[in-house]
Amino acid sequence: MIIHITQRILWLVLKPTLGVFIKYKIYGKENLNIKEPVIIVMNHKSALDAFLFGVNLSLGSNIWPMRFFVSTKEFKTPILSFLNSIKLIDLAYAVFGHFYVIKGAGLDVNLKKPVEFLKKSKKGSVVIFPEGERVFEKDKIRKGKRGAAALAIASKRKILPVAIKNSQGRKIYNFWKEPVIINIGKPFLLQDLGGSRDQRYKKETDVIMEKIKELYFSV
Image (cartoon, rainbow, N blue to C red):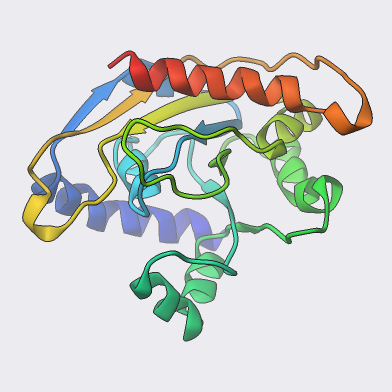
């Protein structure tokens, strides 16, 4: 599969590069020793978040390949908006094997492919930012959307919670101002709490976001 190759090539490029420009503090790295497919949930402060997490994996980690839920419809920075307008974002997403979110299509449609991936694969991960967008305010985590909880229950795979801190607002002149903190929690199996149709997955989503908040504010 091409994404096994492209993601490892990117790792080889970014591992030394990001290490030069950005200081890290990593907690819970022992929780990355995963033997089966997993769902990674993390808060979202920067376009760098996925890369900052990925370079801290070993090249032989069972978390590879990482498959992301993505949308090319809206970007909040001029550079990403421009790259999207000339279709480079679409190309990158295709090469690195991401799953597209179709707004308004519903959970059943959007989760079909990632659920199949998690059930059939022997390794790998699906990465979701449950807040649904980047949250630029420091030390603020928003309410989560239901996709991560629905995916965990449908696939019956464990969730790996991750909190990333201080990644927002990174510029060339302030890369070394303060370290990026990555706190990795223990994988857990999300319990199906049921609920009426309009409340489905809301309690489970709250459980996920509380895990992320606990990791974020404990370091």
